[in-house]
Length: 124
Ligand SMILES: C[S@@+](CC[C@H](N)C(=O)[O-])C[C@H]1O[C@@H](n2cnc3c(N)ncnc32)[C@H](O)[C@@H]1O
Image 1 (cartoon, rainbow, N blue to C red):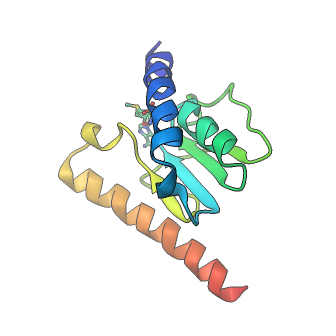
Image 2 (image 1 turned 45 degrees about the vertical axis):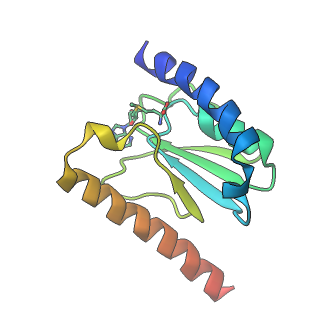
């Protein structure tokens, strides 16, 4: 029920994001939605911007029944351990659940994810 409630919120917010805030996606080829739940936001971004490969990171039980698409991938994992590499990280309604110390750990994992993407790009 919680996951569906969050998805309902994301349905509203994502429609505004992909129509009114298009510019923030300019230049991105990959994006990871950390704590992205069942992927409503990520799916909306992937559909609106087919050139962006979106990953959704969340806990395994949350995404057990979720299916990806050509440019949408579900990654079961733990944001305190590692975040998939990407050009950009989206954190929607995640940080408010955690202490400053925990948020700092999440940000560090995000920074590592973005840095590893940059390293991959340099190596090409
Ligand atoms: C308040 S919900 C927000 C969901 C989504 N971002 C949205 O706005 O609809 C927080 C999400 O963080 C996920 N989460 C909590 N702890 C996590 C962890 N350690 N690693 C990955 N995801 C986690 C939860 O499963 C949940 O989907």
